[in-house]
Image (cartoon, rainbow, N blue to C red):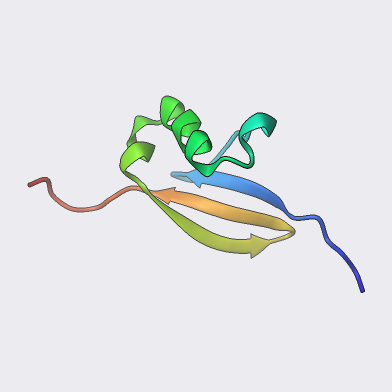
Length: 68
């Protein structure tokens, strides 16, 4: 049996976002931290993009549509 260490990565608009160690286990705190860098993340949907090369990727995707 082989055990692989999987790390988390967060992306927004094709950019890999930093994940501070103290927020790595707090998804809501991490979202607030990323929203400080990119305010549109507050309204974006967090989508699980799967695991690739031992990295579990979560993407923030902007809501598409019209206001109203």
